Image 1: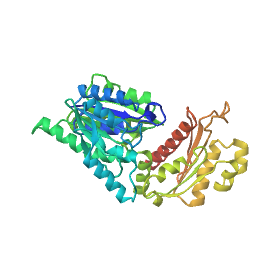
Image 2: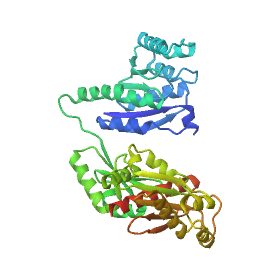
Image 3: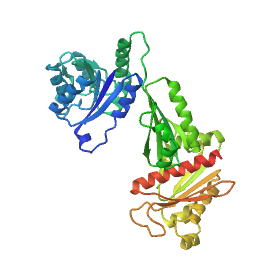
Image 4: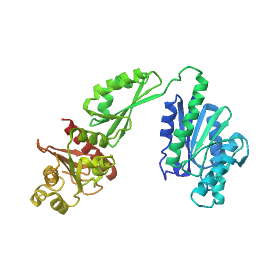
Length: 413
């Protein structure tokens, strides 16, 4: 069975907000055996959305659309679906009852605009929304089954899992009969520390265009994800995943959606090691990533943003003479930051990093993007220098990820 995913919203096509739902929808559809043909992003224009729904229904068995079900006049997905179906809108009793119950629970009076959300195409079914006003819609356009979901992320994700996926699973089982439906499988191996070109060279034969399973890569802030795409038995994917891990070695840090900070936190917990961080150019980004991991308080002793020269002296004990002699962005200062925060807190490991995030402040000797990293523990204080290209935000993200990866590698020995 084939599927098409539509994302609806003027804010999406104008670039005011990034499209964030299509990937999650596609993964969910693939997991129950559907092959996703494409994603489309559309303006809030009733005729354009209706035309897109008709086109999609001619090509695919399932169409999932997100967005455009709100109470305002620019939310036109209901009208577009009705036009594509060739039926009028009418008040749906279940949608009206949902709105009334929502208002009673919050002691609110429904506005006229809210009541628009009870108008559904004739013959459509309601998809329950337990946390919002906009019910979802299930209907048929031609031979295709169409599901329309709100664009609010929490509502979309919950309704996708609780309403749409079970309905599609029933469709797949009905088409396959008693046979088990094939599954679309995507396995992601996450790496850090190798250039994309090196990853490509090491996996060249596995990434041949006509090879199955297919293998491709994506890159973000230094993290290179290797994706294994298959519509086959899981054993073939497992074999390729093992081979990718073998070829890329210690650069592999996780799988799926696993983040560097989660891996570092797990190793700290397993080895019962504590950490203290002194950051400059990253402005607390390393600490923020770590603090996103539940339970990190048992292993993260302290994090300091020592941004100015005075703060480096006052907060982590960097000697003024080191800054005068070597500059704030230097191996000596990074080492002093790592050793100072470790000494002051009593942590097992001290991390120090200092750099130039730009856009100004660079020199020929220390260009924008220069960052020094140091890790202090009982074995010593190794330091490394990197020069990252990109804008200020990218350099900070790249430096924070690099620091976490240095921690990972050091903890692994």
